[in-house]
Structure formats: structure tokens, C-alpha cells
Image (cartoon, rainbow, N blue to C red; front, top):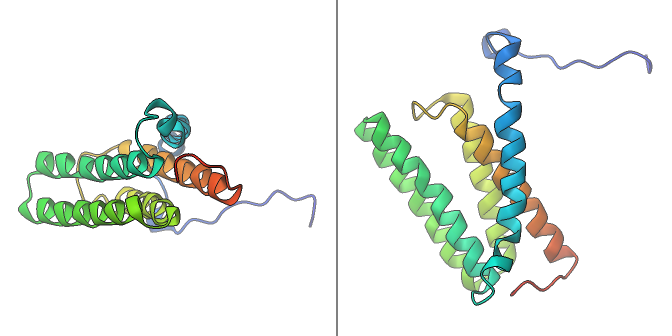
Length: 157
């Protein structure tokens, strides 16, 4: 019925332990959105650099943060995987510097998906609120950069 409120169905094995867990993610996600706006505007703070270079540096740095989490985790396999994942994002960033701007948008969106996967699986231990925060940063920045591309706004492309 149109007047009934829709509710989400969550598989019992995947449901949060209690409602406080879901509410506890609100703050990191909101702060992530704020940082995502700042990330999208970051070329304005570094006008001597091409916007693609600034976004590529940002993508490389956010991907490398998980190496620190992996070292803190201490498992060799986790460290190796996170170094390889960060290397892939560094290659994407390097291609994005001279390639189409959409490569950087895809890189940020892809890192957002990696964050969501990390949050869901807990592959690297001890990340707590970081994956939802970082996913929010990545998705907001990717969306805003995509809007500037579609609007043909020149920010150093």
C-alpha cells in the first residue's frame, strides 16, 4: 500500500548486533561526506598543480592508509594483500594523471567499494569506524568530480 512505510530486510546473519551499531556509523559517514567535499575542492588549495595530479595524490594516500592498518593487524598475508591493493590504486592514480579524468573518478569509486568490502568483512582488524568514513569520502568526492566533468567545469583538466 502507498501509505505503508517500507522497511529494509537484512539477513539474520548479517544484521548488526543492536541498533546502536548502525547509529554509531552516522558520525563517521557524515564527517566523511564533509571530507569528501574538501577532497573534491582540494585542487583549489594547490593551484600550481594540475587538478588530476592533486586527485591522484589523494587517491594514492587514501589507499596507502590501509597498509598502516595492515601493519597494526600484524598478519603477513594481510600486509601483502593491502600492499598489492594500494599498488593497484597507485597505478590507477598514475594513469589518471595523464589519462581521462574518469579514471580518477573510477579509482575513487573503486576505493569506496573496497572500503565497503572491508567494513563488511573485517579483513584488516582494528579499522572500526574508518571504512564507513573513507567510503563516504570516496563516494562524495567521486560524485562531485563527476559532476564537474559532466558540467565541463575546467579545474585543471
